[in-house]
Image 1 (cartoon, rainbow, N blue to C red):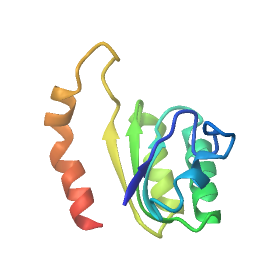
Image 2 (cartoon, rainbow, N blue to C red):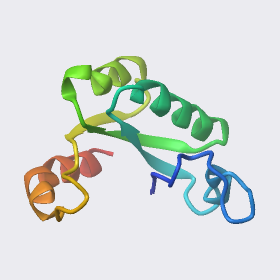
Image 3 (cartoon, rainbow, N blue to C red):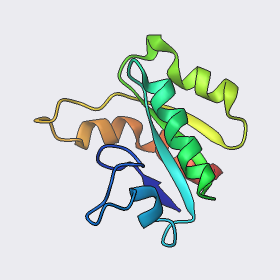
Image 4 (cartoon, one colour):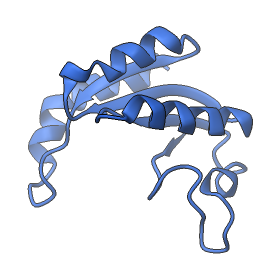
Amino acid sequence: VGFIETAGGVMSPGVKGTPQAEMYQSSFPEAILVGDGKLGGISTTFCALESLVKRKYNVRGIIMIEEDSALGNSEYIRSQWCHSQVVSLPGLPPIAEPLFHWHDNNGSAFESFIRDL
């Protein structure tokens, strides 16, 4: 299982201009998509998901990083995508802040997600 969270999105071009979703296809036929919990993230997540499914990826699950849980992105994604598990994790800390505390607070949810795949 590979994690598909690419710089610019799954359809962004790689070094030679090939979309990243196609570059990784032979290495990671199964994927966990990291979705977008920000405003506009439902569309972004579904576009990435459709791009992966069209390329025959087996999307095993979606992890939504929720910057603003009041938007309800993960709930909507969960209601529309019944093919695999969708889990919501809180937004990441500011770039200057290490991820240690975020991971300590969310590691068990992530591990449970992986175990249930």
